[in-house]
Length: 157
Image 1 (cartoon, rainbow, N blue to C red):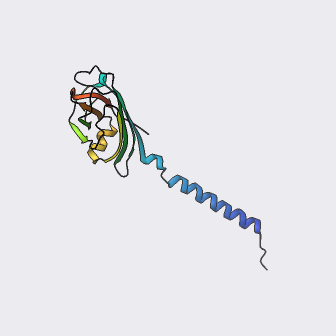
Image 2: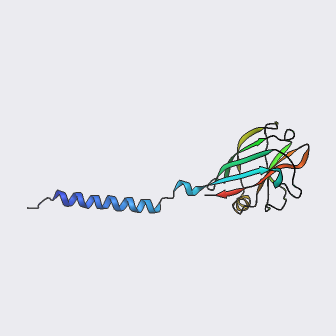
Image 3: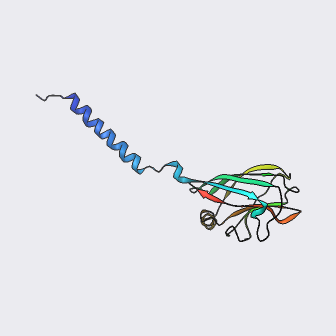
């Protein structure tokens, strides 16, 4: 006759369950590793090659999702000398360099003070530039066609 030991069975399956939880936690990628925070502080002093004397300021904040190559961002600006005529992400460039636009922003409010939220999809090359800190955001106005306020994009986990 076989003797049934419920405690041994419970301990065995508890151990199997704990071991499977441990293995699962080690192999599952955390959602946070799939996204990075993006920030830029926009000022006229950041404009290159010639800083702009303006009281205008702005910010760009957002999240870059590396699985989909999508950047969702919000740009805010306050006190531009006139309504913006263009805005772009530029690159590749350091904070002391200029570069051509790599992503143009469309459908932005034509107001000296406003904000917008958009999602853009990056190429692999653009992703590499963004991650290397080689992008900046620039808002252009009729009074400052090369750009009135600019900020280097910083990416952090």
